[in-house]
Image (cartoon, rainbow, N blue to C red; front, side, top):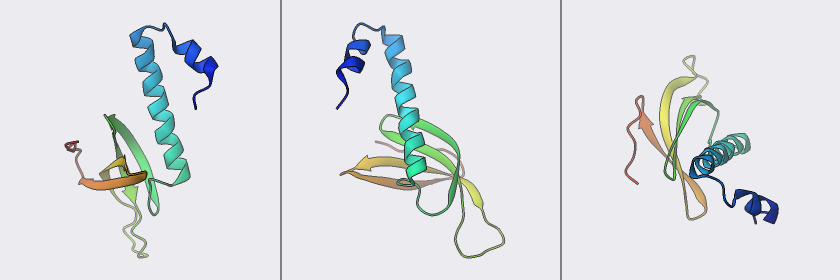
Length: 101
């Protein structure tokens, strides 16, 4: 639940400021997810993050876990989104081609 003090502080702010706050919150969510490992299976290094609606795109280097000498692989783009309370992901490829929502 959002504290009343925050709700009160948001009331009456200009739309441009609210957009900045939204972007900051999305960035914090993405950062927290990367720290928790919830949305990052295996060993991955996040190089870049972009948001498009409810989808987060991440450019990552990936360790395959096979003791290969070519690790890490990539970087590759992946899409992440929430569905039914779970984080879902999809491999996009070397170049970012955004998914249809």
